[in-house]
Length: 320
Image 1: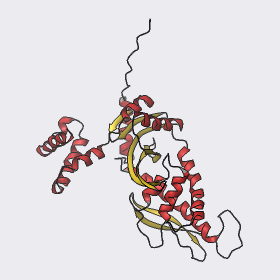
Image 2: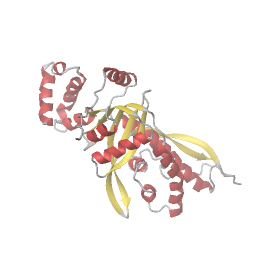
Image 3: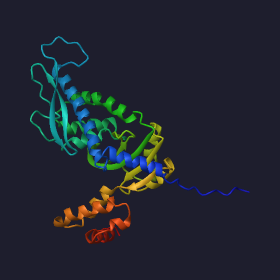
Image 4: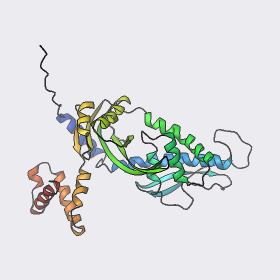
């Protein structure tokens, strides 16, 4: 006679874990999934620097590690501030002794890179082939760039991409955010719209780090389970909270991969979705009261005050 299977109950987060998370969020000023943008800046700046290094190799005719009899040579870096889709950031621009180097990915007087920044980030997504990375670089530099130059830039940044994708991760992350950026990629001469899911981890020391970028095409519990298992294979043993915006199948995947992890709907996305229905003239007051509600320790405290009560009722109707 077969043994009766016992129901599996998810272990709820202990008060001790909750206190750890609260202290972490307060001490390191970790507020929302918008912190993903700050973490992406480091990745973006480092990649642009490597692309410019390949440009400098092409300009001088030899690589940085090679000896070459020339009256022109590398002469350090110059810091330049640019604007991007993720906010302002500083990039390191290589210099040559003759000051004859003309950067191409970010030109000398160019101050805005929002037309290429998401394409650069997309190259780090798991699932991008070498051919797609080369096509993306061709889109960034333009069709006038030679095939040999695109190949050289690809060879320059591909090891960096692979090393970043497979680097070991920490054992424990108190909070992980998952959010998507949308971009276009050329595949066999066809432009496709794809979503790249950015997975941001907050370490126990408060460090914000993009753990992985995953191309999402058929999001489901099976898909998210493969994403979470990839984190486990790179060393992650426990996550206290996963914060995301109602992704299909994510709760089931979390229960399987990290059974002690709590799932939380991202308040930033909830607020944004709510504000879509609010007239522009009322948004500032509405958002202020929503902040009071979400920061309230209890439902009763959140309903304290006529204005907050009205907005709570409206917010509830919007979600229903």
